[in-house]
Length: 294
Image 1 (cartoon, rainbow, N blue to C red):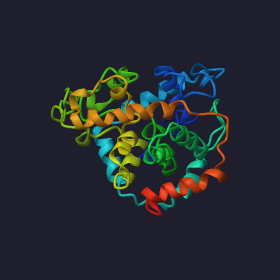
Image 2 (cartoon, rainbow, N blue to C red):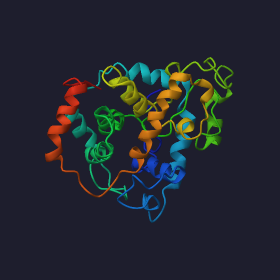
Image 3 (tube, rainbow, N blue to C red):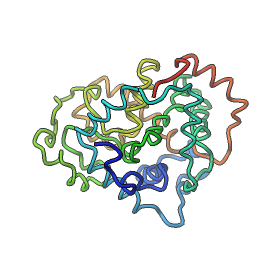
């Protein structure tokens, strides 16, 4: 199954990828300590809320994110044979996703990522954490390779085992073939108790893609942030503790630290890229190769 199988409406149910985050801000409000530009209640203030498009997004996500679908995407995209770019070229590429529908901010993707990383840096976190803030959404380039929105963003969850009722819109999993397949619809499915998330396949999206791209370059704490920052069913709802081992529990502390920076740092204030660029070029060179394969 590939993107050409789907209609245009199925490929892009959202007006913008950011509409997924609109829903997160409603479902998972956080303390105001990081959301300094305005109160958290003011984020995503649409005159007409986009709830219907979010609902349709999750209907498609839950119907099509099957174990076999994920295996196919891993085989296709984890060859990293689509494009090779410097980090800065990849941000230029990502900026083509800019959309007018985001009510919070009209900055390009690099500016948003800089806001995240600068908030992390201002709080005195390690430099690899700052770099993680800069990189964390880079996997959204999947949309530019023809992937449907629901295979790029969205709350992530394990495939190959029973879907938790703590995942948003769990009723939509009734249309997922795996929900009716005895190989996949039990508590553990194809996995063993407390097998560790490194042995678990997650629904396909920008998180897993970027993790696989950077796994040889960044500290493990950073890699957990990247790989599981959309795994709300666990880091907010504790729905899949039965698959985690002690190593996961230790590193999920970092995922929880990262999450507020991911959601609540958007601001109309434009970071001064000219001033910041030397710092980030040196930081990227410390951890990443000159070019990355996509």
